[in-house]
Length: 244
Image (cartoon, rainbow, N blue to C red; front, top):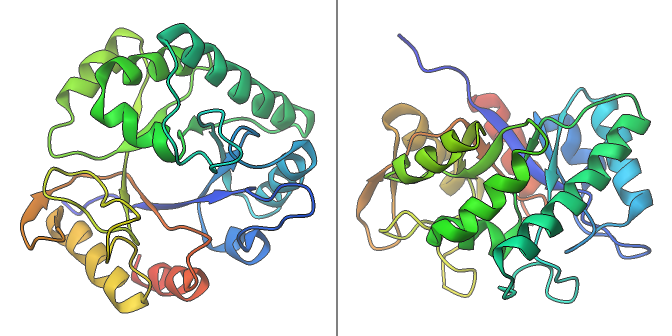
């Protein structure tokens, strides 16, 4: 039996006031799922609304993309928060996007944490449980990094009745432990289309990816992420559309 088709998702709505990031207008028609920033690492109410309207226009599913409260660092720094603080912070952010979706007669489909929070919840099951606790309030799936061993995360999510969507990255390099290579590390971001296509073909055909040190790890993913701020994002997305 052939593997079900895999979806493409992208972080969107990450502009802020007059500061523009990404190429949302051209990227949106090429993806299936838009991870919309919720104001704590990027975005503002009008940007959120404009991104939702653009997603509706192109029939793209809308997901909340909450983060640590870190506008200055674009959500890429770990912020020390206790479990309650983190859960309530996420409910606050996702609730804002959900309300904005409802104002346009559409719905929130999933939650995907951003940046440092996304990485931290894979490394620390206490943080993961705080995120799952918040997600359980909204009755939508939580997107997370597909890992060689997903079982510990599934066990926690099952207790809260939160479905998990497992994600792989088309344009990021991996470490041997299944984590994404830090952006500070050389080769962590794949910037040419050929490298991305090769990695995605390996993921789709064999459920595997080659890490930066040359080892092979197994990954079973439901969706692929491409970053809209990648300089070659449009070329990469067009090539991936042909492949998929």
